[in-house]
Length: 277
Image (tube, rainbow, N blue to C red; front, side, top):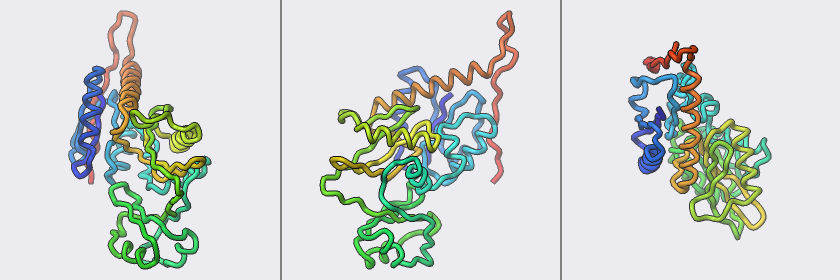
């Protein structure tokens, strides 16, 4: 079964409805589960799990499921409980262009002049978790006000604003090696598709979305999300469902050992997530 894990506090409800309806249209068995009850949920080793949530507990749950042989979409990335700036750093190492940024910021001991000299204004202060928010500061005074209102426990990084005069924002989706733009938009530019492929490969993603600022001749990747709702592309949702369907089929076939008369010697076993806190 395809198990979609969601969180009560996030705005993924509409995305999940679209994916679930698509699964049913293609006869893929699907169930949505709230992460708040995940520890008490039983899984089969033929299940495929997709964390459509940026909840801070995703890394721990993904690791426990993977240890039990359950396939987790984006599992290699999620088990490391990665921060957003990690994805940006790996993308840069893979040759993907983006704005300058600084991570590992201690808000309690922030030396403002250091960031002014290295990043310049305007700049953005971004949470290491998608649920934390993004704040723009035009000068030192605004930066001080932004910092005063932040929760240090979320983790934060700073990024130079890209204010190219002819800029536009574009969101792209990547599913199992294929890149998709939003429905009814032009085919993504070749250089941006190559950037998406580099991100997917360097971070071992099965599916992700990324936000780009585009100018006439350049691009800047400003965000990478391992839990994309795929709101904007029915084609990307269908690609996800096709990918899940292939993984479910593979796991069912792998889980069966058949002798010559057709009897199944071993079937899938059910397992519950370890209930320790």
